[in-house]
Image 1 (cartoon, helix red, strand yellow):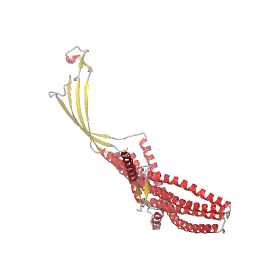
Image 2 (cartoon, helix red, strand yellow; image 1 turned 90 degrees about the horizontal axis):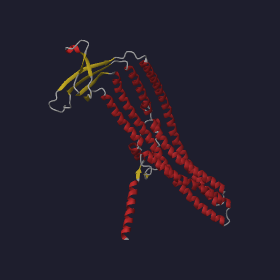
Image 3 (cartoon, rainbow, N blue to C red; image 1 turned 90 degrees about the vertical axis):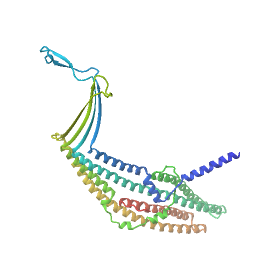
Image 4 (cartoon, rainbow, N blue to C red; image 1 turned 45 degrees about the vertical axis):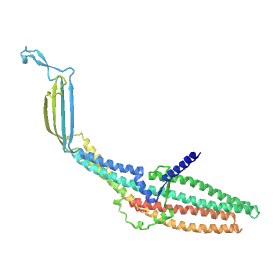
Length: 448
């Protein structure tokens, strides 16, 4: 029996330790840093950069010496017969002699060195590999900005849910106490039944909202885990509060920051697209240029009527060859011309896209600054409204229990308070999210 108790105690301790190890605490900046390293989209963007580096070297290597080797073995099961005029061997004119050339078996080994001397498409390929790497790096920057914004939004939603639960639980406790007191007053004949019913309606509404927010809180934590790259059911704890983050994110100096469109990541990506279209045009033009390649090979061959190539007595015959090959395009039935014109059209499109991107970014930055400034102003307004709603609700509660105000007046004041509470929470979240959007469009990352 004692051993059984020890096993149960050991199991409970192990379970407790395991659950403690499973819980991780994050400030907002810690959550961002963790996500930039572990978010699946961010990791894939980093892998794209590594792949682009390999692609760059793969392109470079095609212009460097290429060495290949081959070994050929032939065994004529039946050798080919050739007819030679018999008179070559002293025979009668008009007759032919059957002759078999060569040996029944032969083997040869050859090594070949190939080297590009001039190829216009190779030069374009080198430039394209560099641009492709830039595209991958810019895509990683864009991904990091989006991941950062997503983490801020998800982190804020969790804090909003947590704060909403606390407020609703507090409202529920106050209503439960008021309902109990009002019921006693009604039972003593000093209050109407309608007042109790009005209070019950308000209590039920708050209780229902609390249950819903509890469910949303679980979903908010799971969404944050996914965004950070954690297991969806991982136990996480947030160390920042919604109010502190709001105060930290009120920075109107950001509104005065000059926006350099050319440093914006979306502009850089559009510029990369234009560069790639320019290179495609160069590639099509380069196809009209001649290509020049050189090669050098050498090898050995052995012959015999039976397989004796591994013996030392086998005789080997060496050979070597150097050559240069030039390929000159002459006429393609206007195919190259059509491809070049198509590349020019695509380049014109990318140039217009770059101009449009620049103009859209200017509007996007102006809109983000306006939204952020409004969120700060709205936060101050909602904070004042909440203070007023709290005083109004308290006054109506006192008046109601003193018999001065009606149950309808009290319920209206309570509803107004609950609305002001949720609007205040949403206003705080808007300040955090709108600043994140502004920082994203400005390509600016400030540590919290």
